[in-house]
Structure formats: structure tokens, C-alpha cells
Length: 187
Image 1: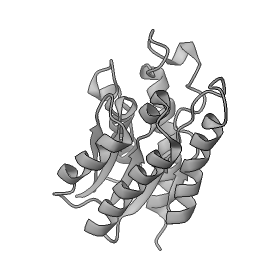
Image 2 (image 1 turned 30 degrees about the vertical axis):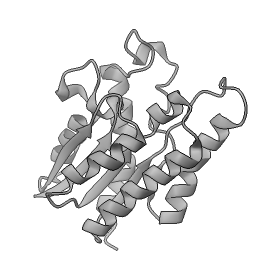
Image 3 (image 1 turned 90 degrees about the vertical axis):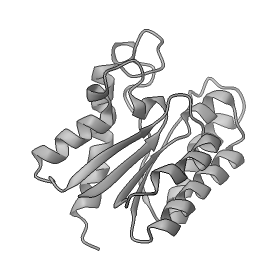
């Protein structure tokens, strides 16, 4: 069995939904349907987690081998206005820890965005940090995990922030599109 660890926050945990409706479970089902039966998806989602929390939490997930690591943290940093530089450093540290333990690991970074209604340059800096990290580390990149879901009330729970079951399907689609490339790549 090869493990795929999806390491994130409430979006990954499937906040407010049964675990089976969270996108890591949907990815597991997609893998099964496509014949990738030797892969097991681990849901490393923790509601409310920040990148700083992730730095401390990642070690507990590295006791079993990780073939593919999907890093989906940062949304809570954005909501809290944590400086982009700090978020970048934390994400980089998580990437380093995973690569250090498993040099052969393939990594996918899920980008996050915050609404442009946030004043000043922060929204642009926040969006850019994910793209730059992916380039610097030469890792696979999903530009925006919540593409088509953020701000769409039909795809979110009543809180307007967390995807509902239909929204989670879109998160799964965005993630699967990139994961499929990684699985197909024999480099």
C-alpha cells in the first residue's frame, strides 16, 4: 500500500459533514474506480489548523511512508491575516520535513486565496505565495482549491465558509486533476 497524505484544515477534514463526504474520501473512491487500488488516502485535516500548527503536527504523520503528499494548509492563515512571509516559511518547513523523511515523495501544493475585498496588498501577496512556493520547490500545484466553490452559497454550508457535500466534490475534482498527472508521471 502506498499512502497519499492530504494534510490540511477544516476543508480537508470535511467540517460539518460525514467523513465519507470529505474530499479525501472522494479521492479514495476515485482511485479505486480508476484502478489505483494500491493507494490509501490518509485524511490529515484538522479544523482550525494554521500553517504554524501544521509545522508542529506534521511529524506525527510521518511515522508511516508517504508516497504522495498533498499540502492544503493556509486558509486559516489568510482569514487571520497572518503575514504572507510567515505562512511561506511555515509551508516551506512542512515541505522540508516531509522531503527530509521521504526524499522520493511527490508533493502537490493546494493554493488558497482570500477575497479581494480584503484591503491593501494582502490578498495579492497571499495568492502569490503559493505559486512562488510551488515554483521554488519544483512541486505540483493546484492554483486554488476552492475554485468555483468560494462565495457560491449553493456549494457551502450555511456559514458560507465551509463547502457542503456538493462543494467537496469540486475540491475532489481540482485535487484529482493534479493527482492524476502525478500518478501518470513515471519520472
